[in-house]
Image (tube, rainbow, N blue to C red; front, top):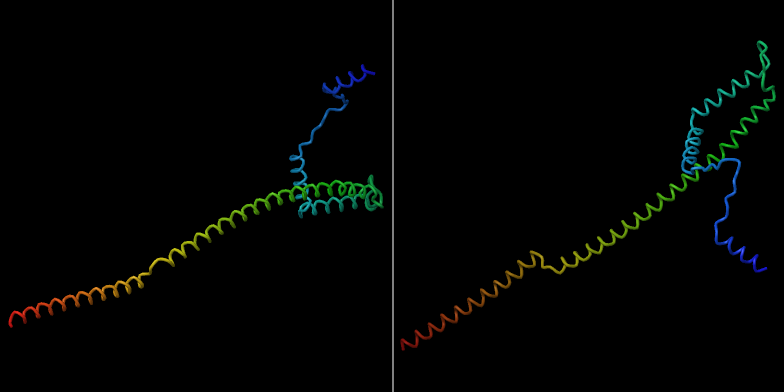
Length: 184
């Protein structure tokens, strides 16, 4: 019992052997296959594809309709082989189209996330600029305007001139008073 437990512990400490396969391992490159699927889906959505498909089906039907000179027909009237080919094409086309749509959805999701981040950054920038403009407006509101300064300077100048005139009159009166006293 102890020997079996030790063997199991040893097996867990070492990597297991790889199983050999008769077929070689094939790894799909998802991006390459996805690009192929997108190209195929894009081609199936064109007028060229519809035109070629229509031409092939018309030729197929005309070749297999029993009229004109005798020829070997590979698909008789109910066109079962044509139905099989079209079903096979549809069974491969649907998953390829879905794969292309999924890849486009993933690209759209990444672009949407990038747009959201950019919108968030733009919003933050706009908020910052709005706060700066509001601060500047408040600072400008506190500053004296040119007209206000002019009116204040004028009134101050008038009061200074009035004081100077009063002092001048006082001097003249005092000189006149001294002169009159001297005459007496």
